Length: 177
Length: 320
Ligand SMILES: Cc1cc2nc3c(=O)[nH]c(=O)nc-3n(C[C@H](O)[C@H](O)[C@H](O)COP(=O)(O)OP(=O)(O)OC[C@H]3O[C@@H](n4cnc5c(N)ncnc54)[C@H](O)[C@@H]3O)c2cc1C
Ligand code: SF4
Ligand code: FES
Ligand code: FES
Image 1 (cartoon, each protein chain N blue to C red):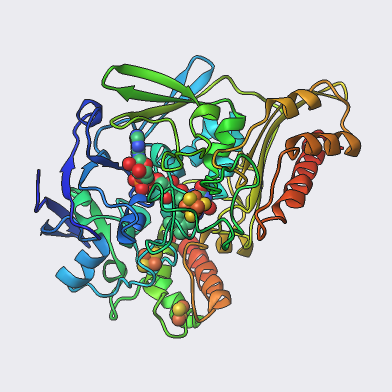
Image 2 (spheres, each protein chain N blue to C red; image 1 turned 180 degrees about the vertical axis):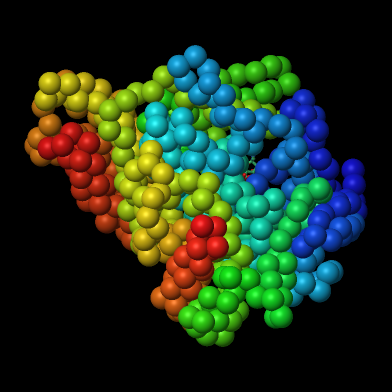
């Protein structure tokens, strides 16, 4: 039995080795071992979404995942989406729309939104699109709210978060056309 | 979190008959390990054993135990022919959690009884023989059907409720071989052994869930909860109902948030079958369903709530 299991992860394009106590969550590995403190710890129990990162293209709660279980996985954190010099479309939109107040939930909101946009492009259904047999065609604000329900904002910046996401989606559509 | 050994299984065979606790998505197990409600000495990571495909099987479908809840909900065949399953999955947890949660892990998620999740409280499920703090305590989310004097907890999940209505079957592997457990008989009532949520034996691994040929008709999952999203059910109703010439030709119902199992009652389904829908009929069905219902104090409201939720679902499904 491995007391100090090992895993090799790719984080924001860089190879990183984990070896240590199997209790290390992916969240603590990012923050404490790698110093990637953009990803936040809110509840540590899967309830708030502050720790959202993208693993192999899918958003997950990094607090409810063991670092040792991510051998071979590609992980994107907020640090990998954009930099202060080169903000991503979503980051720019969050700034433009004041999609935050204290900012604590923001990295999780942005990682979550980035993956959510891909889920919509892939035609994934949601509980708001009443009929799961239909692909979502128009993305309403209700739809965005439901799809972002895994990210809480203690400051209640929800309206501006929705506006920011809506604008970022429109901007990306334009680029795509 | 208590220390544990960690190892990875390469194939299903490595996981069958092991004493180590299996970990799949980890979204329930790690949550409870952080609370030290679960304290396994060893974890066996089964995320790399395969079992992550959804395959046609006759007119039905076989969903591997490691398929994520998101992939199942988005599968075009499930959305078209078993939409109840998509709806129930999408009504639960959050997108992040559904991306991680697996079919097998979802079935085995543990109760959300607050005393179970709090190590300092008496709880027969966590520590057999210690008592039940929920009886006479805060029991708003507890059972109204099938509870015992040892435990009044509910099975909290959504997906298994839909699978019960859809007549799904759970496939497992034990050291002595494979077996099939109908979804309706997978979970168990608490009785005097509430520590056991379901009929899985130690060392038994869920390999797949199969859906029989599509039931057709209207398929509805109505989940009543404190928030519009990202909250467990207070009560839920899953219905697969087919009408023929103004009568209910077939109906399969299952109920969540009300018992230690996804609750089903064949007599209720039989009472409705062949009848013309009417509010009086729906009332009779609710009477039968709730015949032995018992509130615990804070959850008394679930009895009228379930009655109304059932009537609303039947009205919608029959077009009445
Ligand atoms: C904040 C929050 C909100 C939630 N809201 C909802 C909700 O509204 N509705 C809902 O239904 N659920 C909800 N959930 C629960 C969620 O659906 C479950 O945590 C998830 O489905 C568990 O799957 P998993 O793969 O992560 O299981 P794990 O945590 O990996 O495992 C859970 C259990 O299953 C066992 N297990 C796993 N796979 C197998 C297998 N193949 N064979 C045998 N045993 C196995 C494990 O040993 C463990 O005991 C919520 C969870 C959280 C944290
Ligand atoms: S209801 Fe069941 S789970 Fe809750 S405290 Fe009582 S014994 Fe424990
Ligand atoms: S810190 Fe992970 S969900 Fe709250
Ligand atoms: S901006 Fe403060 S929690 Fe969201």
